[in-house]
Length: 104
Image (cartoon, rainbow, N blue to C red; front, side):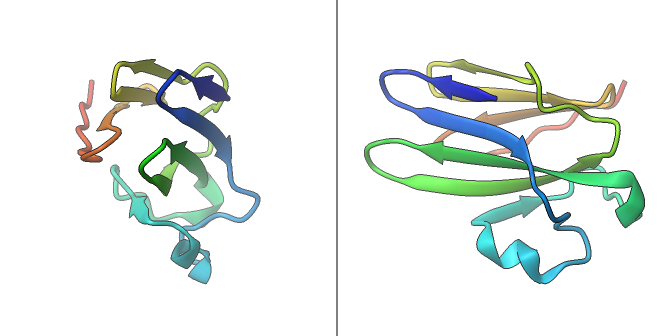
């Protein structure tokens, strides 16, 4: 999924190699396992690439194997909201990278 505004360019896609239990996490600026998932066979890594004039970031989110990268995000000003699964809501300020979760 690609989102582009006059300030930001954001790409979201699943990694070919799962970050959970891998040394592959070193190529990311930040890695979040918000739900503390442990089973590598039941997870995927959602990669979020954020770039603007002043910086670029590559962030990995460990998510359930049932999550989707299609139509999963909305950018409003500098707030990127990413929805994964039916139990996690991730909200990022594209400058602060704060993460909130909410379980239903």
